[in-house]
Image (cartoon, rainbow, N blue to C red; front, side):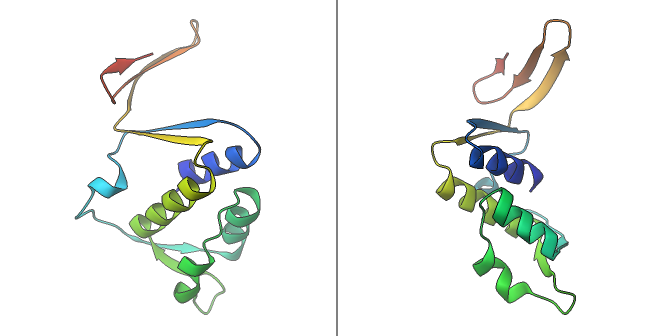
Length: 120
């Protein structure tokens, strides 16, 4: 969730963002294992105000007595991804199965593999 939220926050401020993720796209995970997560009020506000991602319809039925929302990791990721794509279709691009191969600090370059092989 952090990568998607960070990309949305940057896009909300006018940046063009490329998100590189080592895992396959969530749509390619039909039987993915997931785990429960608690999202508190501050996190909800940050997603809405800083990133422009309104998850109200997704979170409302998951509210609990502590003022937070109990969600599952896969469901939250899927919802964040679809909301980010709807809100920032021209600003955020996602690249799946892009693993980091190396960083050369002196040359100021990053090497990764995925989406068509090794790239720099």
